[in-house]
Amino acid sequence: MKNFKFISLLFLVLFMMSCKNENDIKNNEKVENEKVLNDFFVIKLEIKGKKDDTFHVYFTEDKSLNFEESKTSWAEFISDSNNLINFKYNLPKDVLPNQLRFDFGVNNTDGVVINKIEITYRDKTFNIPSAEISKYFRPNELCTVFDSKANVFKPLKTGDNISLFPTEILSVELEKLFM
Image (cartoon, rainbow, N blue to C red; front, side, top):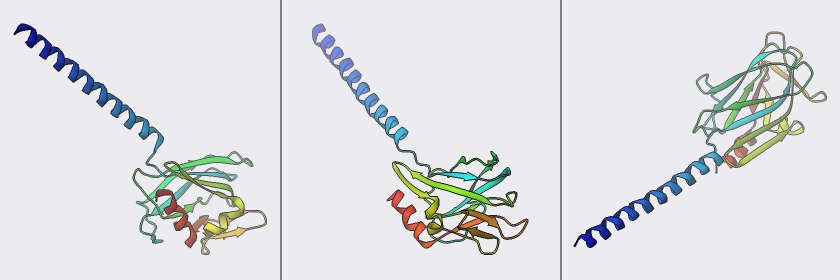
Protein backbone atom coordinates (compact mmCIF):
# COMPACT_ATOMS: atom_id res chain seq x y z
CA MET A 1 0.00 0.00 0.00
CA LYS A 2 2.89 2.38 0.80
CA ASN A 3 4.40 1.64 -2.62
CA PHE A 4 1.10 2.39 -4.30
CA LYS A 5 0.81 5.78 -2.51
CA PHE A 6 4.44 6.58 -3.35
CA ILE A 7 3.99 5.69 -7.04
CA SER A 8 0.73 7.66 -7.21
CA LEU A 9 2.37 10.69 -5.62
CA LEU A 10 5.35 10.42 -7.96
CA PHE A 11 3.04 10.18 -10.97
CA LEU A 12 1.06 13.23 -9.80
CA VAL A 13 4.26 15.29 -9.36
CA LEU A 14 5.55 14.29 -12.81
CA PHE A 15 2.18 15.08 -14.37
CA MET A 16 2.10 18.54 -12.76
CA MET A 17 5.65 19.27 -13.91
CA SER A 18 4.87 18.30 -17.49
CA CYS A 19 1.78 20.55 -17.50
CA LYS A 20 3.86 23.44 -16.22
CA ASN A 21 6.44 22.94 -18.96
CA GLU A 22 3.71 22.80 -21.60
CA ASN A 23 2.21 26.07 -20.29
CA ASP A 24 5.65 27.67 -20.23
CA ILE A 25 6.15 26.73 -23.88
CA LYS A 26 2.76 28.19 -24.85
CA ASN A 27 3.47 31.41 -22.91
CA ASN A 28 6.91 31.74 -24.51
CA GLU A 29 5.39 31.29 -27.98
CA LYS A 30 2.84 34.01 -27.18
CA VAL A 31 5.58 36.42 -26.05
CA GLU A 32 7.61 35.70 -29.19
CA ASN A 33 4.54 36.32 -31.39
CA GLU A 34 3.82 39.59 -29.60
CA LYS A 35 7.36 40.75 -30.30
CA VAL A 36 6.93 40.02 -34.00
CA LEU A 37 3.40 41.39 -34.39
CA ASN A 38 3.27 44.96 -33.14
CA ASP A 39 -0.27 46.35 -32.82
CA PHE A 40 0.79 49.94 -33.49
CA PHE A 41 0.61 51.74 -36.79
CA VAL A 42 4.04 53.27 -37.31
CA ILE A 43 4.45 56.13 -39.75
CA LYS A 44 7.97 57.12 -40.75
CA LEU A 45 8.82 60.15 -42.83
CA GLU A 46 12.05 61.15 -44.41
CA ILE A 47 11.65 64.93 -44.36
CA LYS A 48 13.60 68.16 -44.59
CA GLY A 49 12.70 71.49 -43.04
CA LYS A 50 14.96 74.38 -42.06
CA LYS A 51 13.37 75.18 -38.67
CA ASP A 52 12.26 73.28 -35.59
CA ASP A 53 8.51 72.82 -35.31
CA THR A 54 5.73 70.55 -34.05
CA PHE A 55 4.38 68.10 -36.60
CA HIS A 56 1.04 66.29 -36.33
CA VAL A 57 -0.59 63.33 -37.99
CA TYR A 58 -4.36 63.14 -37.67
CA PHE A 59 -6.30 59.93 -38.30
CA THR A 60 -9.85 58.71 -38.70
CA GLU A 61 -11.19 55.18 -38.60
CA ASP A 62 -14.54 55.82 -40.31
CA LYS A 63 -13.19 56.93 -43.74
CA SER A 64 -14.35 60.48 -43.05
CA LEU A 65 -12.23 63.58 -43.34
CA ASN A 66 -13.48 64.84 -39.97
CA PHE A 67 -10.10 65.13 -38.31
CA GLU A 68 -10.27 65.89 -34.61
CA GLU A 69 -7.62 66.96 -32.11
CA SER A 70 -8.43 63.90 -29.99
CA LYS A 71 -7.30 61.62 -32.82
CA THR A 72 -3.82 62.88 -33.44
CA SER A 73 -0.23 62.02 -32.76
CA TRP A 74 2.35 64.77 -32.64
CA ALA A 75 6.09 65.03 -32.23
CA GLU A 76 8.73 67.71 -32.09
CA PHE A 77 10.64 68.14 -35.33
CA ILE A 78 14.25 69.15 -34.72
CA SER A 79 15.73 70.49 -37.93
CA ASP A 80 19.14 69.54 -39.24
CA SER A 81 19.15 72.50 -41.62
CA ASN A 82 19.43 71.12 -45.15
CA ASN A 83 19.59 67.40 -44.32
CA LEU A 84 16.80 64.85 -44.45
CA ILE A 85 15.57 63.74 -41.03
CA ASN A 86 13.98 60.38 -40.26
CA PHE A 87 10.84 61.23 -38.35
CA LYS A 88 8.45 58.75 -36.73
CA TYR A 89 4.90 58.66 -35.36
CA ASN A 90 3.42 55.77 -33.37
CA LEU A 91 -0.35 55.84 -33.46
CA PRO A 92 -2.17 54.67 -30.31
CA LYS A 93 -2.55 50.93 -29.78
CA ASP A 94 -5.46 49.29 -31.61
CA VAL A 95 -6.01 52.25 -33.94
CA LEU A 96 -6.72 51.10 -37.50
CA PRO A 97 -6.74 54.33 -39.51
CA ASN A 98 -8.18 54.56 -42.99
CA GLN A 99 -7.46 58.27 -43.43
CA LEU A 100 -4.41 60.35 -42.48
CA ARG A 101 -3.71 64.06 -42.52
CA PHE A 102 -0.31 65.65 -41.93
CA ASP A 103 0.26 69.12 -40.44
CA PHE A 104 3.83 70.38 -40.56
CA GLY A 105 3.52 73.50 -38.46
CA VAL A 106 4.07 77.16 -39.31
CA ASN A 107 7.79 77.70 -38.74
CA ASN A 108 9.11 76.36 -42.07
CA THR A 109 8.11 79.30 -44.25
CA ASP A 110 10.39 77.99 -47.04
CA GLY A 111 8.41 74.74 -46.95
CA VAL A 112 9.18 71.10 -46.25
CA VAL A 113 10.47 68.38 -48.52
CA ILE A 114 9.07 64.89 -48.00
CA ASN A 115 11.40 62.34 -49.50
CA LYS A 116 9.52 59.22 -48.39
CA ILE A 117 6.59 58.02 -46.28
CA GLU A 118 6.59 54.51 -44.85
CA ILE A 119 3.53 53.14 -43.05
CA THR A 120 3.84 49.84 -41.17
CA TYR A 121 1.35 47.68 -39.33
CA ARG A 122 2.32 44.26 -38.05
CA ASP A 123 4.25 42.55 -40.84
CA LYS A 124 3.02 44.76 -43.71
CA THR A 125 4.58 47.97 -45.00
CA PHE A 126 3.32 50.54 -47.48
CA ASN A 127 5.99 52.82 -48.98
CA ILE A 128 5.31 56.11 -50.72
CA PRO A 129 8.37 57.55 -52.48
CA SER A 130 8.58 61.31 -53.07
CA ALA A 131 7.47 61.02 -56.70
CA GLU A 132 4.16 59.42 -55.60
CA ILE A 133 3.25 61.52 -52.55
CA SER A 134 0.84 63.69 -54.56
CA LYS A 135 -0.97 60.49 -55.60
CA TYR A 136 -1.91 59.81 -51.95
CA PHE A 137 -1.91 63.31 -50.39
CA ARG A 138 -3.02 66.71 -51.61
CA PRO A 139 -2.17 70.11 -50.14
CA ASN A 140 -4.94 71.84 -48.22
CA GLU A 141 -5.77 74.55 -50.80
CA LEU A 142 -6.66 77.03 -48.06
CA CYS A 143 -3.15 77.15 -46.59
CA THR A 144 -0.65 75.01 -48.56
CA VAL A 145 0.82 74.94 -52.06
CA PHE A 146 2.93 72.24 -53.69
CA ASP A 147 5.92 73.09 -55.88
CA SER A 148 6.20 69.85 -57.87
CA LYS A 149 9.47 70.85 -59.56
CA ALA A 150 11.25 71.32 -56.22
CA ASN A 151 9.10 68.71 -54.42
CA VAL A 152 8.35 71.27 -51.67
CA PHE A 153 5.12 71.80 -49.73
CA LYS A 154 4.93 75.47 -48.72
CA PRO A 155 2.55 77.66 -46.73
CA LEU A 156 0.28 79.75 -48.92
CA LYS A 157 1.23 82.82 -46.87
CA THR A 158 3.32 83.53 -43.77
CA GLY A 159 1.67 82.09 -40.67
CA ASP A 160 -0.20 79.37 -42.55
CA ASN A 161 0.11 75.76 -41.51
CA ILE A 162 1.55 73.30 -44.05
CA SER A 163 -1.23 70.72 -44.27
CA LEU A 164 -1.73 67.61 -46.43
CA PHE A 165 -5.05 65.82 -46.81
CA PRO A 166 -5.52 62.27 -48.09
CA THR A 167 -6.74 61.42 -51.56
CA GLU A 168 -9.32 58.65 -52.09
CA ILE A 169 -6.71 56.02 -52.92
CA LEU A 170 -4.93 56.34 -49.56
CA SER A 171 -7.75 54.68 -47.59
CA VAL A 172 -7.62 51.65 -49.91
CA GLU A 173 -3.89 51.24 -49.32
CA LEU A 174 -4.18 51.72 -45.53
CA GLU A 175 -6.90 49.10 -45.26
CA LYS A 176 -4.67 46.59 -47.06
CA LEU A 177 -2.33 46.82 -44.07
CA PHE A 178 -4.88 45.50 -41.60
CA MET A 179 -6.80 43.07 -43.83
